[in-house]
Amino acid sequence: MEVRNLYKTLAFYICTALAVLVALEIVPQRNINGRDSQDFSPLRVSDDIRVIGKEPHSIQHPKERKVLRDYLFHRLEQMGGDTQIFDYDTIPSKIGGEFSYSNIYSTFSPASIDSSMQASYILLVAHYDSRYRQIVKGDTVFSYGAADDGYGLGVILESVSLALEYRKEWKQGIKVLFTDAEEHELDGMRSAWERDRNIFEGVNLVVNVEARGVRGPALLFETSPGNEKIIELYSYTGKPSGMSLTSAVYRFLPNDTDFSVVKDSIPGMNFAVIDNLKFYHTDLDNCSNISLASIQHYGDQLQPVIHEYLVNAKYSAHDALEGDGDVVFFTLPVLGLFAFSKGGYMVLNILICALFLFVLHVYVKYKMLGFKGILRAMRHILTFAAGAFVLGTAAAYMAAVHSGVKFSFIDLRYVDYDNYMVLAMLLVLVVWILVFCRLQERKDRFYAWKILLGVNIILMVSTLVLLVVYGEGFFLALPFATSSIALFFSIARNFKWLYLISASLTELLGVHFLYLLYSALTAGSLGVIMFLSVMYSFSIVSQYYCLKRRVL
Image 1 (cartoon, rainbow, N blue to C red):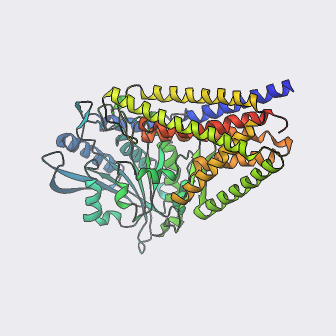
Image 2: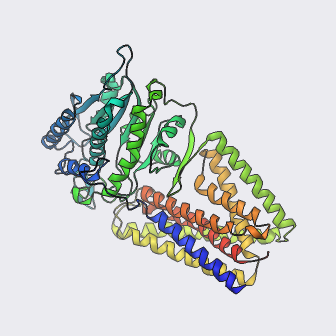
Image 3: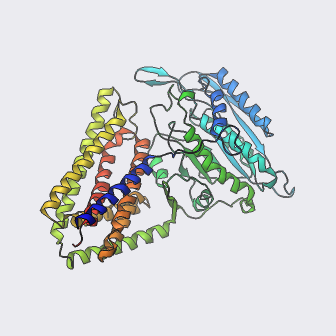
């Protein structure tokens, strides 16, 4: 028995360690394609970015913005685009004074189209102004715009250049819109939409390429409503990354993009990197801090999507990408994209809840665990979760005070050593839970099952609440589903290895999701991150002990 338990222990630690490594390798070490590559090359993109991000080019820098506008205009012309500049009236600036602004627009039509029919187009959008002045810890700084939105400009230029290689196969065309004054109330896109609607003629898909940070995965963080056909198109990508939940979260963040202007009228996708907000809109958003891996990830996702759109005749219809319903989707490292209709997702959740309630009945009635013991375990979990939330929030608040910045739950930037603080607190929390469960398991050999059933009751209730409020909640539903299935099949002893699979999936999801949550909401969300970590940790640790025990 000791040898068997040793094997189980080793297997568990190896699998969970691999899950963490896979989840933390947020942008896998991709092959960075060279400048001579026939595929998407982040090095060629970086050549454009070094021109784009050479100097700040905000609404406070009209000369520098004109130099960049001319550069982008000539790049599009050189590729054969029918390129124009739309100038707009001088308007007051919210930071004082006045400024004028201009959009750059270019069309690449299919090589041969039926003259009796209007071609359909994908509209690729990025903005070419950088952030105007911002006060960071008492200093006035200007962004160089290397990532925001040099990434978008460079990625689109590279994407169009590659697409032109197979232009003879196009059934649809490409339009490019580089907007000005995005950082100032989205003025460029608003003016295009209100005053130059011809730009959008024939457009049945919009792809906006943004950056809210400088590194990490390029997330599909927002789609237009009724996204079922959008996600079907997105499934052609080779390296999917994103989740429908972020569209709901994004509504609470103090940000809009050019996509916000058109998303309710034209089907589309919104991409951005979100890691390292300390560099966002500051002088650290410069060419020395760009991430080639992140740029590569933009290309890995966009190239297959653009290719499929351009060569497939089914996207010629003006309503080809308009859907009646929304899709719940999320991605996991290595495992890829998971998508469900709203109805299908709801039915799946209800079935899992029914399965768990059956399992709970069996374990209480026939395994003699006792509901009081499960309730006691739930009290332990909730006490840990509440304490972790309070401690995490208090730590973030004190870190903000120490760094001399205003505390915010969703946008706490410029905190000293915030990454180290978060990692240290999470490590202490996990060790604390491991020690606690070990001590309890020595007193009660059935404690692991009580904890797992207890945490699953909490996850079930939370999943149902999220289902009602947001229509989804996969970050809790997945560990609830896998552990419920493992509990069901482990009623027969031969299937206990399912705990290993369930725990590994929970760890893969948990680490990946918490990383994205922290990147999006910053250290101010530490309390929420600690709270969720308690749920994931108790589920994983309890499944480890369930795996080791031969009998209940």
